Length: 457
Image 1 (cartoon, rainbow, N blue to C red):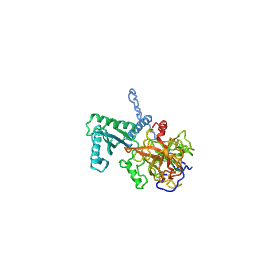
Image 2 (cartoon, one colour):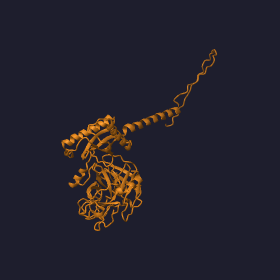
Image 3 (cartoon, helix red, strand yellow):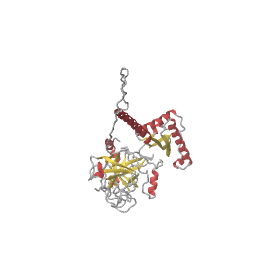
Image 4 (cartoon, one colour):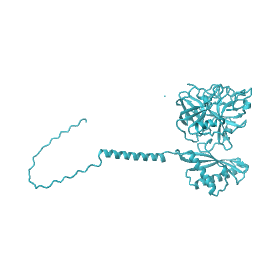
């Protein structure tokens, strides 16, 4: 039964996907009066013919000159457009590393404490000096997010912000930043000793506000606890809405690169024509923050509708999106990662909140917990229907679940560095939010090789 986020509802939903099928003519008369001149005898001199000077600006040369001038102006405009008119865009990187010449203090856990503030400012000044001394004019600022304990010192998590032309390669920028840091560790005397092997730079799975401030995972957790389940700007920037032209929202999807989305195969049961689909981003469907057409749809070759096995598909955008605080890609987990039971994960979507209710215009979120396959395959739960490519999440008592309209959407979790990973795709379930009937998700780690074979990601 392919799935909307239901939060603390006692009503029962039925399915998780609902695929339904703009001179005048001027005449001049000249009269000439001829007078016969007097005839005078003059001495004969040799006639000298003077060659008439040819006019330089004849029509052909004038046309060629005009074309040359037009070409020069066109090239100039192109150069100006490329370097001036085309705005730079922001690049955010999450950097993590270990500092070995200081010890962790308990007050580092409180961001309002004097110890955290002073240490954060020291780290930020050091990172700023590294980039400015290197001559990296594209560096904007840095912000420490977290200080955590390590047996050999303190783990640092911070955001690095840069401004580069939108045409620059993301991979090349990342390599340049890493080289600057590594070179600084060799040549500069720094107040803090950074362990070179511990340095990591990540661009996916980052959540930022409009003011370029990171959104910690604890923020979403606190908002769920206090009952405010509607998402805020920048909270889930990889969430997309898959819409059929003329029929509206059908499924959710997750952005995994500038051009690729990961979703559920069952979303395309009734229509596999890419030209009939559009994708929007933002916390509202109307109006969307970004809208794109779909170029290609790839459904898993071994998808089985009857058993919901291999319920996974890819959608390629016709035009790439630019990353921002509103649109960002989620990280894909390594195939070896295994989440233990009762891990906190988040599901998001635009689906209905009551049985057969309407699609929600505003994105909603819910915190659920992973449930082991052994428990989910119990006779009183799903009686052996959960395969290796599936993941159960929710609560055994029900109440919170994904539902109709959420199909294909993301199930994500944050690691210790507040980097978000896509672990599941909303797939199916028996009704919605029923006791002992948690949501069933496509287990993304099982399909890492398949995703890489189709996208190179």
